[in-house]
Amino acid sequence: TVAQRLSAYNQLGVYLQQKGMYRGSSEYFKHASELALGSNDLSMVAGIYHNLGINAIRSGHYDEGLEFAYKSADLYRELNDSLHLAQVYNDLSTIYRKLNRFDQAIDFLTKAQILNMNHENWSQVADNYYNLGKIYVDRRHIATAQQYFHRALRIHENTGDAHGRALCL
Image (cartoon, rainbow, N blue to C red; front, side, top):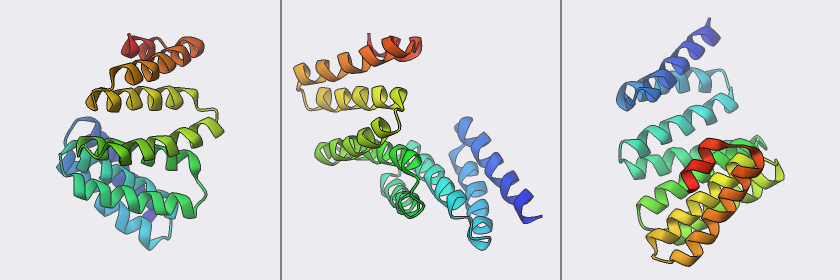
């Protein structure tokens, strides 16, 4: 069935993405997106666009990453899926940070932060603070960076996230 093929293509794309095989992963995601568009599964399309954006970012193709991230964000907004939208905003901030467009990176992290706080998604709130700290290190605003790293550390300690805590130390 179409649903089974869609699922198979998507799962293969995720598997290859996890292995760092972004070109092959993107091919499977593109097949999956065609099927998802044909079946009008906008949530699946948004997720596939998000994954295509991640592949582009990890391959250093930032313009393509931006294109897919914005397509994904538009669909998640249309679907009122603010939890996934926050993830896309975080990815957009990563792209803008890599492009040294720090104000835009901060803007998207702030948007992600608000959505994550609304969902009480504390792990992502902490990650957003950590990423804000990295931006301020890049800008050589070390005191401000330390404040964000400390905020992230406190949340990781409060939630018992040892891995997140280790990142902040």
